[in-house]
Length: 248
Image (tube, rainbow, N blue to C red):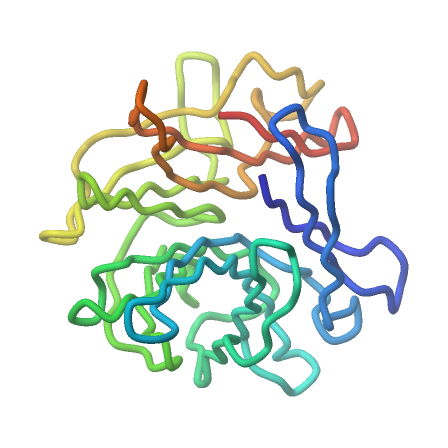
């Protein structure tokens, strides 16, 4: 598992940590972004398999960082599977239309942009509506669609051609309002399918919303002979416990 971690000391650099399946930390990548240049820290993460030469594909993990408050761009930071930064694979998203000061969702669509692959970013537009933006691998904005607001986690399932968003916008449930609610939209017609889901509402969060607050999401299918079922890896803030939790 790869999880973005905000720095806690003024001027400190943000990180991305790697965990094994038992939840033990096995590595840390220090980003060139600090609490000064990127006050909100890294947002959601995405995995991209990119053709780097004829017949050669390499996997990269991308972290979205918003450096606009210090005069920079929104940048997708690339890391290889050992956690090493790969600056030549970074993608600056110039002219980013969504306002700063918010967490963003991020996903990679392998078949996007006519088969070249594209990145999708979700956030809130100035009128507080949700928006999904599609960017080329060179950082050009090529498409946009309306989605539910507050989407801080985003995943894409190539098998079904569907996106999965994880929102922190309060939504009614049988257990009261929750801020871990998800939705599915089709990449074929860019419409909501009607499928919705909640996070793990059994997580105690004191006086706060049950299940915590949505912070990140990734959709994937385990590779192996026994299963290829769709899974969602979720990260939630749990203020009552003073920590974040990751679960599938």
